[in-house]
Image 1 (cartoon, each protein chain N blue to C red):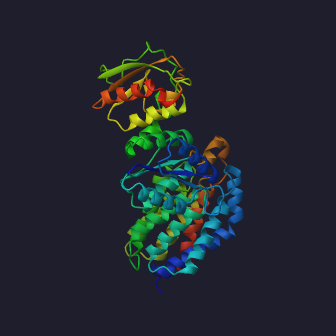
Image 2 (cartoon, rainbow over the protein chains, first blue to last red):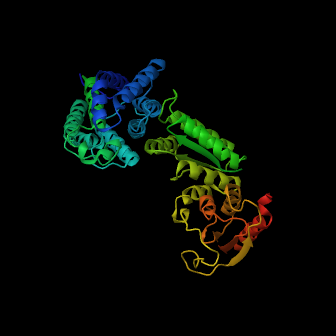
Image 3 (tube, each protein chain N blue to C red):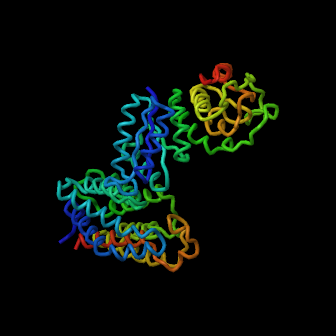
Length: 212
Length: 234
């Protein structure tokens, strides 16, 4: 059965995101305690639980509507810097997919790029600054490459993005933070994985789960 | 129709307190706090900021709104709120210290300044004019960047007991913000309330006012009138 990126997929993705944030809450807190203010796990869990509550209230009609609702909810409930950053990512993705009932794999790759561009515009971080951008950028590149292939199917685009984001998160270990709270630590931030890059990988991995 | 102001802070108490402080100097300006998260924690909330912005724009009746923020993610939340609203042209973000910038902005808005002038007033707080040496009237720089001689100038002796302090500085800066003129008072930016306060000019000091621009004459008359009337103080 071919998977399509429709509103059912989107709702399932967001549900799996919430599950992943709850499961990895402690891990994200520990990562953030080492180089930040230890609230990332708490904040992301609260944010996505609020998204779940919104989904219970009303089922969105399109993927774009679901993404926009998520943007609004994360920006309002997360509190820390991750709120406006992920909120902007979901908002830009929502704008990119418009009101389509089904999103083509190539269009989804573009939506991921729009999300990443939103994060960069909002947070002003560049690749190598040890932030979530270091997970997003390889994910966007990998998704585009997968979508550029002969007959792109959704699952291969989603898998490519998730794997690249996971590798990108691991690759933040040796980096010295130049943005966000961790940048105050300077060289002492090296040797720790960036929590924002990890939560990005979790979100993009959940997207694969939603297509399974 | 005057400019409204929205204060975005991580702390509800900071936002409320800053609004209370600024309202004392600008009683007619709509200043709305958007501090803390929805459930009263430290952080910022898009919903709170959106609600405050919408109300600010509505109550400004076309005058526009200026947003002033504290730390990093408050800026991001404010930017996101503007993006959500489709970047309304009459709403602008300022890059200014929260308390000093807000007071300067509120005073400028009270004086009838437009959105851009209110933004400038807030941002001028930490500009080069923010830390002047208390200068004597005779050591006055040549004028603004152009070096052109002022179109109009005047010297006025402070006659009120308290001399230059917050309220007189607010009156001068607020009034000048709405005029089409570049004004220096003893060499500092006349539209910057903090710069004026830092002149530390006491009773008997002479203020040397220089003005450039279309409203130069009105600007000098305005400052002179206020000083000679002792700012309405004993």
